Picture 1 (spheres, each protein chain N blue to C red):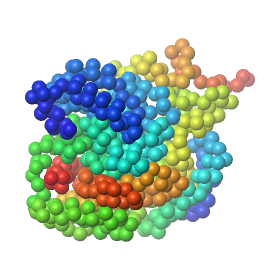
Picture 2: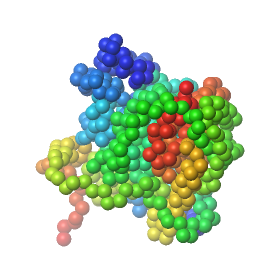
Picture 3: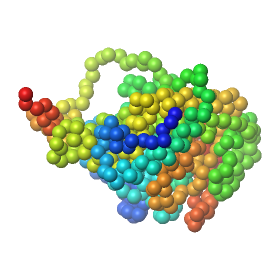
Picture 4: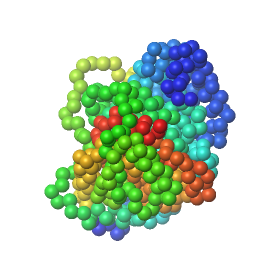
Length: 97
Length: 467
């Protein structure tokens, strides 16, 4: 586990965050301090240890597949930032060929 | 006044649900301008519900304040974020449905750290919440509004959520009772997800009995949450006064090392002595991986948060940036404008530990250490019925104390977050007062931890410690 440096701008792009230059400058040392604390985990011997994804995980729990009333179209659209003709409207994502 | 007392008065005809709401509205007007626990409340709709309250139900006519990350039909659900500042919930969370079925009235939207990330409520993008015991200080967090209102008597009781201590720590700082149930005990359907393997909803209340009453109402299986357990819900009230005689209570030596404020230590040790005097056997135990809990948590929780918060993209609900160049620009600008610094920090951290080349070193390794931490508790509960410790290393600090040092703030979660990693229940109850950093008479909390689904015994011990 060798971090030493995190490319904040690169990772922020993966997370679809714009970030200002000031934010990058603020987060850089803070994130590196956190990662260097996390570095201590690399000293532990975890060979043969199963990972825990959920404490007390429940597997394969299924409910009956019976039809029931769901939220209305109006309820689903009430928080949409932009809508038209009963649909959510977004900026154009495909360009003309 | 406690739920227990109000219920007695309601059944005796000495008060009405509308009168209780009216009195609360008066207290909110009188004091919440300073405390800032409420983001909003809707007295009109609550009064309409009060008019139809069924007093024969266990929580009939009792208003319960709701943390602002739990959906209540027709009410705001901001999660303390600008991103959701104008969001109105289209449905009730399962806990709300269950509270209503028990006769309770959801009343008030309580301030919190943005998306429950923080332990001071300073990360709310919408409002500052102050500790009712000292307005210069934080109420704790992330359920700071819920805890502050219960302490300020502007709420009878409240729901919060706890991912690493977010119910227990503000309860401790505000001098109220806060219960994080076992992972899977309470449905999370309708709770805005932060870290899905850690989040639980639970009550903040003025007494252990009130916390038990609320847990009784909200616990149990839910077809809408696949992580919610169908295990039978025991009667949490019948054994509440059974005491601690003959019980073995463990004191983890790793939780009483350096870095604990002397006033906290003194009060917690006095609470332990009180339980010993009532017949509990006090046993020193070890949780050897304690020193790795913070690092483990701050890999796993941000990783899950980065995934959960990807849904906030500016498309279907919430904030959308104006005039984007293209769809990618819309995502990036909406998230940049909508999220505050702590949320961005954790999303970046979480994205990093999950990214190619780092996944094994960070995320996968943290999950293995999580197994070691879980085993520490399993081993401990072979020897003892429950574990006693402080909730936080110190009482409430001043507002603005750690804004530039997130790691320092994270380290103060040391005593609470292991319970989330292990999935076990924990409760914070007031155990005294102390002076700290210029503050007088600040509340100190005792934490009690029990085995998975051991809430009945946990509450029983808490009741004995409270008495």
